[in-house]
Image (tube, rainbow, N blue to C red; front, side, top):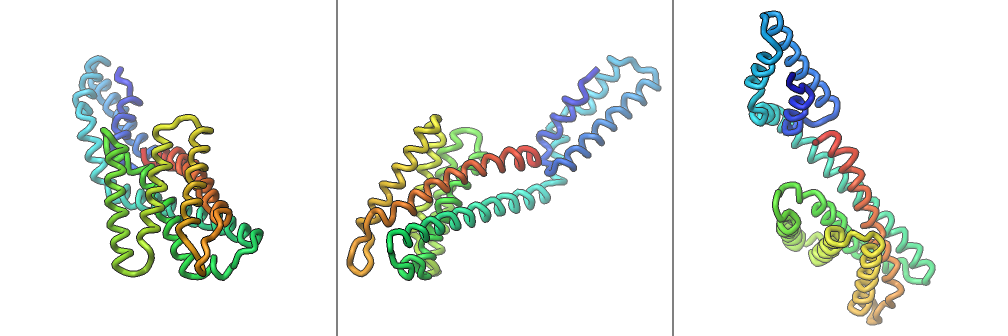
Length: 267
């Protein structure tokens, strides 16, 4: 006889049904429908081989059946997908900001820096914009690739670059922040995500990320000055290393989110 489980799984895999419970309920309904057909046809005197052919004809176009399910549940899938990704991005940005600011606070106290200069409103806004670009950009690069089948990483970079360019323009036009910090954070995210794609050795990849952010701290310490005096590299180093560590944790939690939420409820 036709493998009922295989048929059900083929329909569900392309159905767009979201939620483990709903998918299980739908699977049971499809399986029950197939069982009803088998019982009816056996009662009518058909042989198993004939019933198998009949079921194959009725369910022959699995893609069409799946598309009908996808049409019914498209709004639900879109809404839950948006909520899930938004929640992940919000939690990641908040957690990254809390971690970086905690390290910055401890480093400033330890080095005897000025809290007023580091934690004034303008500095916090600029740094928050940088962290949003870093964390949001990284997550976008992680998941947007699923929109493409071929050359997905290159296409993903192009797509997300356009999105962040528009966001930077809106920020600059509104005067609510510094668009350069958003772009800088996004470029950091592109670098880290590129390493994820092309460097498989964990120790090497993490080492390169740490060195990259340490170099970024050195560059910024030579470019930015308060009261006419350049800040020492050591003042920037803890903050940039905190960003390097936080983006590694962001990648880890994104993979957990993908495995435990997306693949279980959105597959």
